[in-house]
Length: 268
Image (cartoon, rainbow, N blue to C red; front, side, top):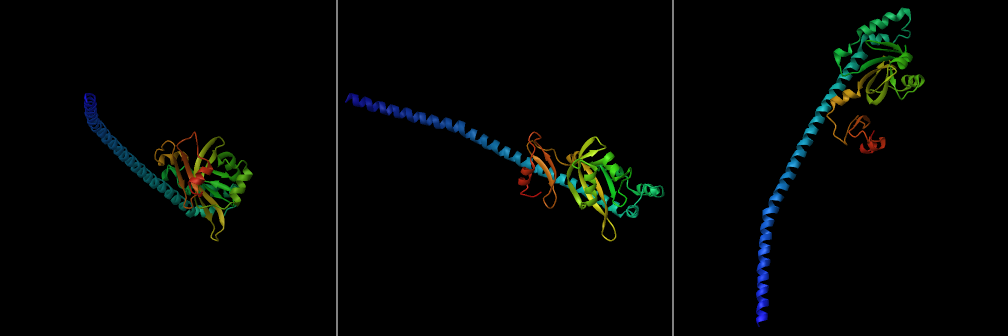
């Protein structure tokens, strides 16, 4: 009997101790875990708000950049239209021999009539008018034959010879609008990445008779765009989805053409 009572007493004591431990555990759980949970939820909420604010700020920056780029392109279009409508340009494009003594004054008169680039838009690298009949490239400051322009002044690096470049200028259709970024060789030694806005010169009968090229350096485009985040990209496409400009936030791992093609959903 005594032994049985001792066992019952021990069980009651153990039960009381267990109840006390459960009580203290619940107390500690309430005191420690709930504030921790509240702090965690607070920080999660703060991070969510910060992320949302950052996303809105980035979206606002991109919208602002889009306005700047559109403004620049509108200015390019205006410059192209003014050059195409210039009376001296329309008169000159009918001339075949321009470097002979009898016609040299026409070059002077044409250049004098052209707009000064730096009074119009300082973001423009330069503009050039290509006259197919005389095979001459002219702007406010220069006048070259096609061959001298290629060899001495400017050409796309992808055309490794004058013959390739000449074939492109004479036979490829001239597009209207902004072309994808290309690498150019400037004055035989400097490499420059540039976007090229083009438009054809037209004769009254509709036949092509030359073209206008207006160039924008990649460095200027970068100033128009917001600062790029690490491991991100910035790009511009035209209405058909063709890639015009791409900037990579991780130069150690640039995007391949296939990756960009897939990202754009098969466009470009």
